[in-house]
Image (tube, rainbow, N blue to C red; front, side, top):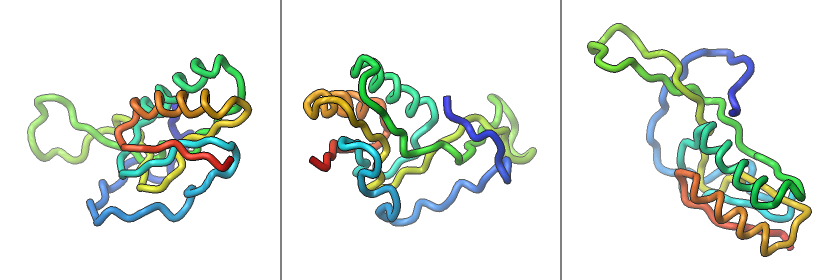
Amino acid sequence: MLIPKKVKHRKWHKGRGRMIRTATDKIELAFGSHGLKATTSAWVSSRQIEACRRVLTRYTKRGGKIWIRIFPDKPITKKGNETPMGAGKGAVDHYVAPVRPGTVMFEMDGIPAAKAKEALELSAYKLPCKSRYITNE
């Protein structure tokens, strides 16, 4: 699974649930001709990204090329079960990629459009956010 090799700060602040802002980068296809674009915001974990990658590679029978445009670099902490309140912040449990509406998460090229659309729609079931298929053809 995807995790950062080295981080500047081990634990991050959670961040405020501000009004849903749309993405300003990664909003268009840059590498492939087919893609999966988020329509809602979510934290996508490294396990979910790996599950999508597996669906895409298996469905295309390892043909074509796949690009993962998001990377989980935000650490999420969790305290142990039955731990009393206080005693500081918990240990890092997993990493997530914060995704805003409009972010292109996955791209594909080198396979027919119908097959790419079906593969990307199957992988969208694995994600916590709503998403749609896009193409530049």
